[in-house]
Image 1 (cartoon, rainbow, N blue to C red):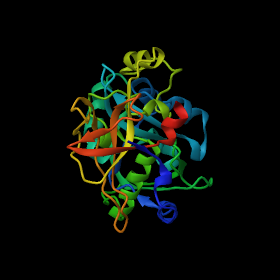
Image 2: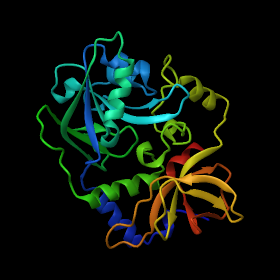
Image 3: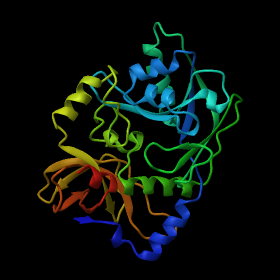
Image 4: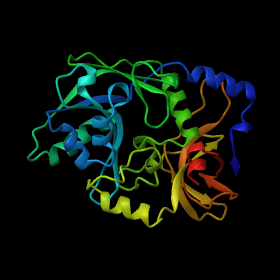
Length: 305
């Protein structure tokens, strides 16, 4: 089954647009400070994104990069937004905006490769917010095209602001409709590759730079056109298990789900999730846990086809 945004009532879309403009507190994300004069080169050499390019050739509010941490076999581990620490009032290095649930793992991964580099790794507290606006101003333009991100980093032990859960839910549902992943929710850690998670479509891979961990597999898949499946947004009338199998009507497995996000209070738009599906899935009937799935049109995937 396939569908698009036009199946959503006009009044519902209008209400979504108004609420999407409200700020959202990313209570599921936190900070990691990579200190030292070699921090940019350290991260650029290890991770997939345009860290050196974006942080040394862009000034001020545009100096932000999206990057991914991979296994040597090119499998996804984590994502991070990278920012100049000086732009956030710190003496040196860079600040990583990372999923809180993976911060300890990311810190350990970076520490494993910190052999000869003069860098330090320190967790920081603070507050990360976002807003769906294209108007230049304070904050940093989200490299994925999802408005702007705002950062309040401090060195105290103050807890990160929690915000309203419904705002964070609204954000995750909105990014799914756009086809934009967050691997900690949507992918299988150490099993998914970047192209399957659409990270190659949102600026998280610098194809021009030298080596990074997992580069060989990432570049080979890209240059040889080996992408056979991608994460696609789907809708269901019922909640589904995270990473449950997706199949054809005959039961043949063709992929799996990511995390399923419920409808917002007062809205009846169904459950949204990503599903890893073959690129030639259009027109097929697909099911998960005996429930039919509706494939939504993704602006990101439509632009890349």
